Length: 90
Image (cartoon, rainbow, N blue to C red; front, side, top):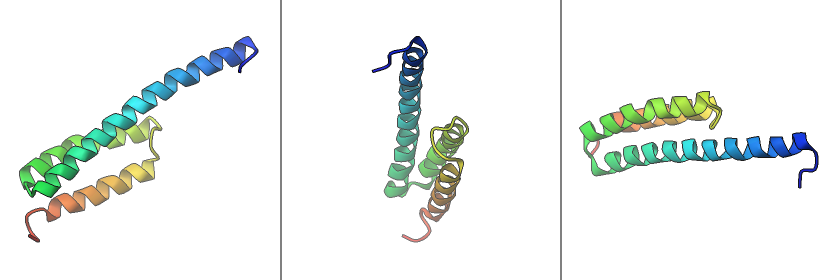
């Protein structure tokens, strides 16, 4: 347990930041799940719309440091190619 006033304050700040990051990570996962579900249904329009909404969320999470920027870039790239493939190879 923190003993000094500065350590106690640091613990409070970390707890706040953790809650914010948890919320952001959850939000990103929700958007990704919507894209995955749209891809699985085979609805290209829905998949594109979901991807269009998910892309800025991933970029925002990367800019805030919730996920690494290369991870966000990789996920965007892979999702993009999967969304493009929807409906073609059925």
